[in-house]
Image (tube, rainbow, N blue to C red; front, side, top):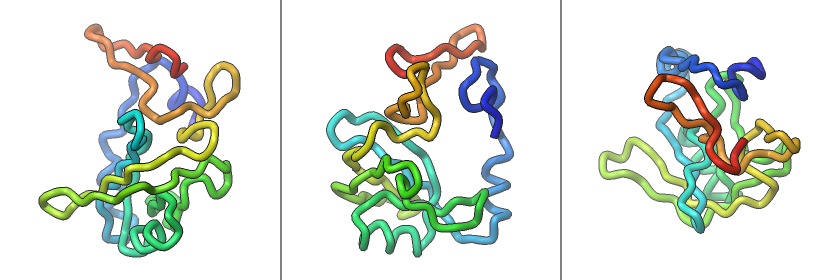
Length: 139
């Protein structure tokens, strides 16, 4: 992914993401990681049965990377693990909520202007005029 896409101020939504997820060949459901203390939504990923089993066993937020087609324990390469406090399942049993306690400097793989990992991936706001702005303290 490009730096402009991930950290820029130009709106470029990927409306083909679910088609890409479906094409990866895995049976997946959305899995959201939310900070158990602050309520901040940190990451939206996807989980299959192996990711859920691994999350339960390891106690760390685990996803299935649809782009790399492999198991992804958040923080394994960055050190920014998300320790699971609780796992919740929605009423239709088609999505997961990981309530987590971040164990590193942030949850997002992108960095702010001080080169610190952002606390979560939702650091841009869509303004009424269609432009993007950075959420205070998240840029």
